[in-house]
Length: 147
Image (cartoon, rainbow, N blue to C red; front, side):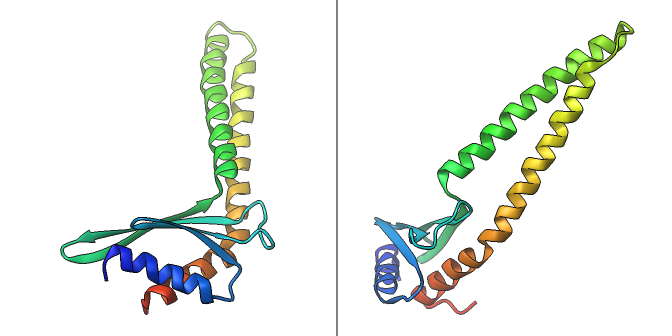
């Protein structure tokens, strides 16, 4: 099937599914999310693109957190990384002139917090897994893929 037909299959599947999903449709692309009734902070967002490659429709997609959650994590990683690098430089300078390396302690704390952010993200990924699985099942069923 072509990309437009694939989008039509998803649209038809969305109109008949009992799963709590909703979608937005674009030429050769669709965005799938869970409905507001079952949405939580960790609810996933699926972006699916249909493209023609070698006379076949190739399906690519990405599943991840909604944009506000994604932005929060990217901002946290960015800020903590900058603080860690600056604190490492400052701490090394303190250490090299035989002062107490407070900067190294701050860098250690920043690295610990990066680990905490990572662990929270993995926890959220596990909490979103059932909804992610239902999105994948829906997409496969709509397109008639038997993987």
